[in-house]
Length: 118
Length: 114
Image 1: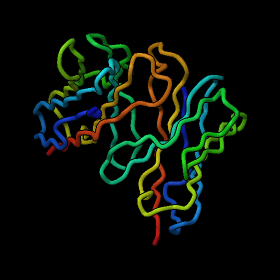
Image 2: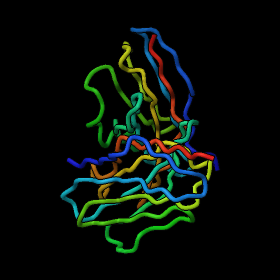
Image 3: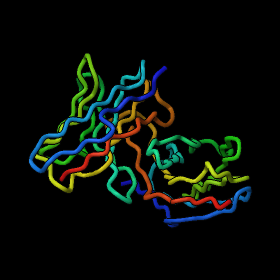
């Protein structure tokens, strides 16, 4: 079974600084997707960034970028120029390729609570 | 284009009552997923449905929980005879037929069992 591990329950960063959130996963699949979701106090789950395992290039979305190390099964999220609005719980998630019964489910890590200090 | 709509936002039930949680997927989305988030934990998969079909319910507790996604109307997650341990946030997500990425999540229903 796939598992996703986030080893940092809490992280903090100064406004305008850079922070990296860690995520490792375990899978025997070769094709899959990885995601970072943000959950602010409103509880809404917001997709931050997505990475396809077959792509060697790391995904980037404005101030958010990932460091995807497929061999090491590592998928960290870097937030540059941190803003107060970045404060939230961040979840790493995995989904295998395909649409058969279990292919569509997301497996989440336990989350990292990010605090941004002014 | 409205997002995934869940209601109610908050639901309080006494032990032994029934809870019905509703989810209207995004327009054009035919796949619905339910996840549960216990306090201080990540989201856990419960069930995956398409119109009139349960595709994967391997994450659903065997008793008291059921889900449906009828041809017309919202998807319903039903919890019978609720217990304190059912208190959690329940999230619905939807995706189109051919989804190559993540889903769109609703804002969740927080169920409190008293």
